[in-house]
Image (cartoon, rainbow, N blue to C red):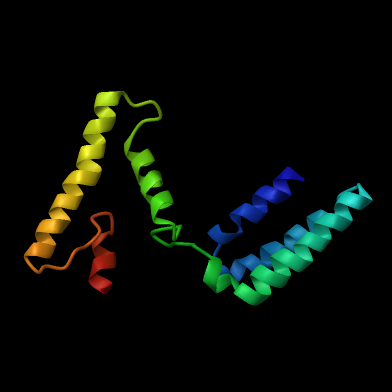
Length: 134
C-alpha cells in the first residue's frame, strides 16, 4: 500500500495527459489489495479525492509540474531546495555562511543595483532560453 501512496505523491511529476492513465493503473492495483476493508477505503479515497477532485475539478493541466523549472509555488520551499542543492548535507559553519552570503546577499545586492539603474531584474537561476521567451 505504501507504493500506491508514493505513486499519488508522484502524480504531479507526470505529463498532464498521462495522469488519468496512471490513475486507471493505480485503480487496478488497488483492486488487487487482499484486505477488503483497506481496498474499499483506498478505492473510495481514489475515486472521490484523487479522481473526483484533482483529475476532474482541478484538472491535470493545472497541477502537473512536468518540465516546469520550478516545481513549487511556495517561495520559501523553493529557496530551501535551491540552498540544499548548493550545500552538502553537513556543510561546516564557515562554508555555510560563505554559500549563504554568495547565494542570498550577493544576489540581493545585485538585484537592488539593477532596480536602482532601472534595469529589469531576472532570477539568475532561470536558464537563458527561458529569459528569451519573456
